[in-house]
Figure 1 (tube, one colour):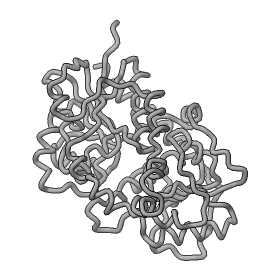
Figure 2 (figure 1 turned 90 degrees about the vertical axis):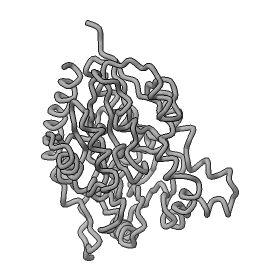
Figure 3 (figure 1 turned 30 degrees about the vertical axis):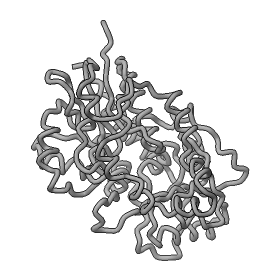
Figure 4 (figure 1 turned 180 degrees about the horizontal axis):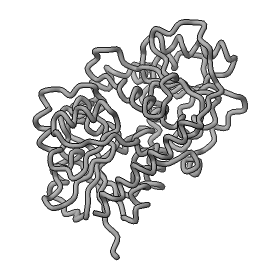
Length: 374
């Protein structure tokens, strides 16, 4: 029997979580017996509008600091483009390149089924609306549309985009999302059954990820920090763990706080090195969904922090609540009102979490396979 051809619309930008989830979802689709190619959509129109150079400069003081001190050349080291490109060339399979949504509407792809997911492809704040490619609006009638674990990333959907979003996702044959908050949003708009499924990075287990992880080569036990948020309690908690444990802190500096610190800074980690940094750490401190997910996958002790304050427009905290609730690890959340002394628990027992994850992996993979086989 001829294998099905599947087109995957997903994010694969120079971001660890994006590239690794794309790899994981493509891998799991192929394990169903299908052939899968990622639709190489490089420049979502709304993303370009939302993330023009002025916005990047305003939002990234580290960029400005680097440019002022050294000029533009070292900035490219921060982007790690060569290692991200190497990862994509080695592990991802793509269609031809499409730079605009219009090019995809005109293309003749002729896949048997189309899947969109995962990452925050349904977050209208990031894309200045509902991107038509990530909502599979371009797919011809009669072709199967499957949503596997797209993330809205928000607790509330902006009203100005709600009707358009409803009209686009009403056409799907199977709807699933990554977070319970997203489930409530999609169900309230469509009144359809919506399943909460694992992020693709959790469909693969630690042994699967070990096959591509590259060791960080650190000689001593270390704390690994991967932090986007600038809230004061994040830095205070990191320092508390460092002083309490006496271990070195290794970080990929994403904020001015880490850049100015005396921590060991890693500027040249690609996706495979990122995996190694988490796997080999004694403990991880993060406000990142995917760093939390990989800590769980590798059974590395961790603490998750809240990046955003309540009421922020693009509040992404729901992703952390959801993954910790799903895995029964709510006690690994550190809130802003943490009281010191705080006992640092580095002897986590992942037995129950692994059992829950294995059961959920089998269930979610079975749903994906059933949708593709139908």
